[in-house]
Length: 388
Image (cartoon, rainbow, N blue to C red; front, side):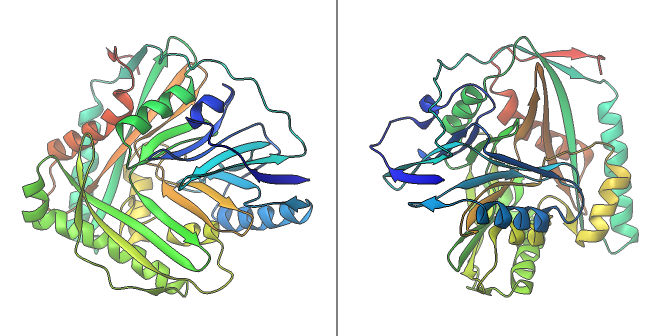
């Protein structure tokens, strides 16, 4: 039996969660927190999204439900067909627009909570030859941009850190939510971060997406640089085309706006419309992924270039992360400004779009600024050179 019922507002959601692999989804004071595992589904490969949708329908068919909104599955998907996971917590507490509720699966007992622990010290393991590898990758992409039909390729970096203690994900996500209140701060199966990019949200037949591409520290540069405008246009076009191929009727897109975050500014375009009946949010996320914002244009060619040139395993970085309810509606973002925590290890990721006219040093600086979202959590950020 799955029971959902309204509850009085309990205050900060993070104060309700025990410190044991919680699932967290927060934005601007609203969101959901969950703990325990009523069910878990893991898969790999290109059909992960459809397999996840099928598993979710089958799992729901075996459980009686009482009350709304019902059970929620939180998910995170590999960028390139790697490990993907759905988790159905035993307990979920959510708040949206002043309405607070709780969902319990199989009469799970509420877990005792403990005070959030401070963020441990970290020692980042950086390699002095990493910029040379980055420069070589960027130069190879620029060559392919000149010689092929490629128009954009997104390259990413990963940095590893060693923690003095196991990271309390509640603390990390709470700090990210405070610093980036307009972002979606999350933790799903050890992957945590604060992403500004909404891949797709569905509610009944309404659909929306927030496309970000083009990054700068100078608002005037965003407005006046043709390279950044072109990069943004590629990303918007990839989302619009994928939604239309899924049968969505879309509203006209407005002009890009500037989305200012604590560390960088992006060009942003909101895409809205209406879906055909019966489209599940997780399946739609699979059709949209990967967008030009995290892969490039043309997508297939850019994807192949990444696998040949980038030289890292992205894992679930830049893959969809989010949740869906019993109706298949949900909210899926792109896992950006994020890191994977395992024991006393942490691996952070960030990337930049390479288009004609890009330079290795400028794109390196952009990636470094994006790393600041995770590195900024650790007050005594240290670097151990040559340890990787």
